[in-house]
Structure formats: structure tokens, C-alpha cells
Image 1 (cartoon, rainbow, N blue to C red):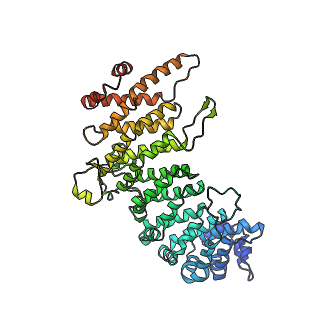
Image 2 (cartoon, one colour; image 1 turned 120 degrees about the vertical axis):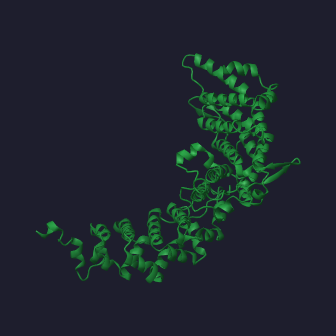
Image 3 (cartoon, one colour; image 1 turned 180 degrees about the horizontal axis):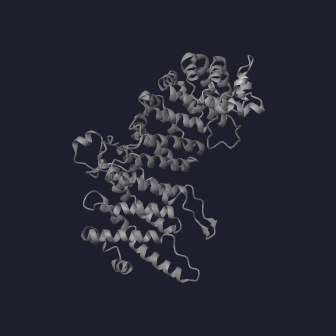
Length: 536
């Protein structure tokens, strides 16, 4: 009756008592993983022999297993190592590194999937790593990194080609996760310096080059995912959240040289996949701004949402002046794409009839404009009077027509001269059913109308919207057309009417707050009588 008290011998124990038991026999036992997790002494002694550990590692990366064992053995082997048996980990990383870890790492030497160009029309034979097997490999490396971060990082950094080996297989999602795990090691005291090593060995250059508009769109997506994850890991907006802080990769990413290259890729007029590059490039720029917003602490809504304390010591603000300057210089080209998008080839058939689509390209450009406006309003980009801040590169001064402008106002001057905001207003009314677009453009208008009209170029931008964009007239016309449509049998309310109400409220607050600065400046170009009748 000893079994009642847990003194029974398990089937695995009985098997391990045999003198000639093999690893394969042990792997066939149903309770193997449970016994490994509970640190069965007999099992640990059996497994922690160099030949057994070597076989387990070989199973994880094997390509010649028979069908019944092809999936089972790699899974079991990786799960056994994931049990973090200390003797086994020591053997792999410390005691028998050359015989165990080095051959295991050579898994990355296998043939990678070739980089596909947009011009490739032939079917390329599927090569590269098996995704399931790669996940087992990366899981194992992750365990080793967590147990011996210093030793593993020294091993990886001992060969400058190791980063290239990882980058060659970036199409495999598990390998991408491994790369991001290496970046995240910077959070640990034992991993300090890994980001500098990655930067010095060309990580960011490799990722940016993958956004080449002559490459396949899948390459663009891979680069965007990696870069955005690195940006999020490096965020400085929320000090209470985990972050590796400002680092060499982010400094390189937001530099003028990198941003010029990215802008050139996004706006290439000849490249077949320039639209894909633009869409992914805009996502990167938006993430850079959102995760390095130096003024986030001053927004009570965001502070409350994230439980942010104003007493928290926040990191040094990240200057985005170079990035904003480069994007400002290209506002005319982006605006041109709003008028003549590369991705729209005429109307498409919908349930509402034949309609020309807005296209993801134009939507992303509008999102870019909205986010650049947020960036331009950051306080550390608009103080032109502080010599100390200028020396610290927190603000960049640009001369335009013999006038000194902060980089924030330089962006707004480009918006005014290229008529970007009036064109966005036209798009708002041209696509009455695209609520994503309506939200983005409302965000832009909200920022402009709630900005100060006595400093900077907010006043010129607001006047441009009201005069050249004829916003109030278009709202009145849209309301009248909507009323007529709703009066018909089965009439349908236009999709933008809710946002029009919000925009109208913003306009009235602007008029009431700046009757002389704004209203007098537009009274000859805006039908104020019609507007007053509408708003009443």
C-alpha cells in the first residue's frame, strides 16, 4: 500500500534502472517532462551526460529524423532544456561549450531564403529555416541567455559574423524574436553594451536597406516590425514603463542621414514598391514620435491613463529636430501624392456604386501629417530663445526668408506653402464613408485650432485652413446636402457628420477666443453670415 504515500516507483524509474537503457526509450515515456520538471534524480543523472546533451541538441536542429520522431523529438528535447536543469545548462555554456554550444549555434549557418526583389516574377523555391524548428532553436538560446547572460553575450559577440547570420534568417519570425531578445538584453546590467555592439555591426543599416522600394513588400514589413519594436523598447515618453532608453540605434535612426535615405525610398517616383515603403516608413516615423514625446508628462489625460506621476524622474528628452527637418523638406512631395496617389488606379465597384478608393497610401500620409504636427508642437522643438538648449541640440533654428524659425514652425511654414491642410480638408469631404480618414483629419484640425495664435505659425496655418480650405463653407454645404439626403425615403446620413459637429465646435471656440486675430483676417474670404446661421 506504499503507493498511497507516494513511494511507488514510476515506469520511468524502472526504465532508468536498466543498464542498457537508451535516450530514445526515455523520450518515449509519457511522464518524461513531468519527471524532468520535478527534478527526478535518476532522470537528471541520466540526461546530464555530455553524449546525451549533445544528442538532445542535435535533435532540436536535426533534418534527418524519421517521420514519427520528426516533430516529437525536437519538441521534447527543447522542453527538457527549458526545464532549466542547472547541470545541463552548465555543460552547454561553460563546461563543454566547444562540443555542445558551438555546433548548436551553427544552425544559423544553413542556407537562408534569398532576398526577393519586386522585379522577381519567377517562383522561388522555398528555402530557409523551418519555422517550427527555428522556434525550438530560439527557445533554447533564450533559456541559455537567461541563465548565463554574460557568457552567452560574450559568445555571440566573439564573432562579428553572428549578427549577419541572424539577419540572414530574419524572414523567420522566431529568428526575428531572437534578435529582439538580444536588443532587450540591454535592460539587464549583464547585457549592457549589446545595443552598441549591434549598432557598430550595422543592424540599423541592414534594416533600413530592407525598405528599398525595389525589394519585395515582405522585406519592408520585416524591417518595419523590427525597427518599431526597437523604438518601443527604447521609449522615453513613460518613465515608469520598461525601457532601454536612448541608445545608439535610436540616435542613428533619427539622424538626418538615415531620415534622408528613408524619405528617398518612400518618395521614389519610379520604384515598383515605393507605396509599400511609404506605408511602412510612415509607421516607423509615427512610432518614433509617439514613444519619444517629451511633452507627454504635461498631458493630464495621458498622465492619468498611464498612472504617470509628475514627480517621476524622467529621462533626458530625445531631440527629433533632424527628423522633423527632413520630413518638413519633403512635405511638398507628400502633398503631391495626396492629389495623385501611386496606388489608386481608378474607381472600384462597391455596394454604393463605383467609387474611387482613398487608398492606404493617402491615409498613411494624412497620419504622418497629423503626427508631425504633434511633434512640431513639442516644447523642446520650439524655444528659439534658449542658447543653452540650442547647444544641447534640443532645438534647431532654420532661416527662411531672413526669418529665424524653430523646426516646429518650419514644418508649419511648409504646410502653408504647399497647401497641405486645405488638400486634407478636400479629402475629408471627398470620402464621406472613411471614418479612419475623418478621425485623422479631425485630429489635425483640433491641434491647429487649439494652438496659440499669438506665437509661431499656428495662426497662418489656421487661416490657410479657413481661407484656402474654405472649411466653414464646405461644412455648411455638407450639412445642407445631408439634410436633403435624410429627407428622402431610406435616405442615409453621411458618414462624416459626427466629426463635422466636433470640427464646428472647434471653429467656434477659435472664433470666440481670437475675434481679431482670426475672424478679422478671414472675414473677406469666408461667408460669416451663412456660418452663423448654420451654427445657430
